[in-house]
Image (cartoon, rainbow, N blue to C red):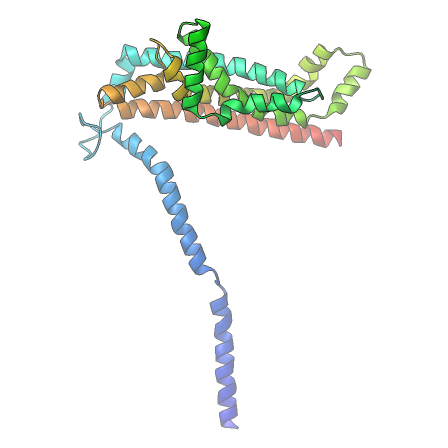
Length: 293
């Protein structure tokens, strides 16, 4: 009787241990996932953090060891006429390219709400600049402008190249907003005697305005950072990425990390503002959908 009781106690002890073991059946998998995530974020954001650190390095050479904290390289960037001019060129071309691309994308998105012959072909043509590699696109634009007799400059060839690159992304951002737009609002306005332009300006555009602003900001960020196509058609005018590349090729100037941080800050800021307006667009679309239902 005592042996049976002891055996039952051993079985009970073993069964009591089993839930504790099966409580974390995928511990090895989770550990591997954490290691992968850590390596992924390290390689993704590690170079950015390194650039920020090197921009404050008090050394004439770009690299480690860290010689001390200084902000003089930012002073060099903001005191350089060539860098400031290149920065102004990038901002100017980015704003104009974003405005043109967003306007064209909005017009195309409005047109794609209707059925017409060759709609799928037009869609593929819009998306071609995304499919073609950047270096091929730059060469094609260079040959095209050469045969057309258009002189390379900032406000002709560079602007066209940037609009050509940005337009597909602007269209892909705006089209879902207009494709999911409630047509009942427009039909109700038409029944009340509103004209198409009044319907667009008073009903459609106020609803999609946050999405349009977000598209313009994303387009600006894409244009501001564009380098490959720009270097083929820029001529004597330089944008900030082309100027940055020139400094790397000519000499590894110590102010390059500070210049890189400036480019990153502008790009991140415009993208964050764009995400904010995109969130507002999604929120307003959900609000109108609830009201309509």
